[in-house]
Length: 112
Length: 110
Image: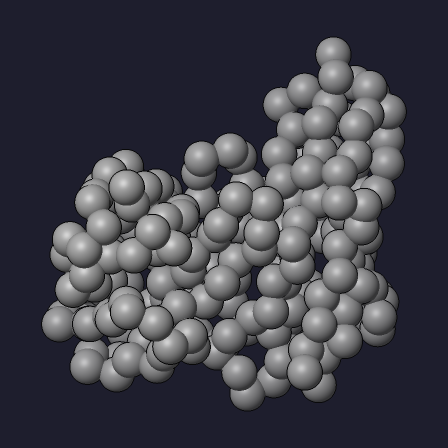
């Protein structure tokens, strides 16, 4: 069966520090991968998605970046965090268009 | 532009009191409509995919229905463990990206 792993679960980082969140999927190949952010009381905001290794599409211009170094690995990064980067970050995968997402357990990021 | 509106924003029910959540949508060529359940502090959990008007799917106390303009998530005789935020999303044909609604927060009191 397919599983998705996302870590860490919680993170407190100072303003200006770097960020690296990792997501891996097991039990499938060539998944579509996604990074979302969910702010308190707001909906899901798509940050990045990838349909293949090295293929990254950015939905929102900001100080975050994403990379897909391996087929089932998706990394969200920042060189310098801002206070506004605080939120709940979710990784998700799907087998293709028309299929529902499987979400990771999320990372609660607090920038202080 | 695809749009999804969920109502109500919040719903409080007594245990056993059946009700429905609404998801109204506009999309250019529906590929799929999705329902998710999200517990506080966790990632959303996939519930259903509906592909065409008239389709219905059930899971325990939940039943999802679909028309050309909206979807309903019917909750029959809810229990406190059904308390969660329910998210609706639509995906247009040819798109990898679904559009999510803001969700309905459901609280079921014992």
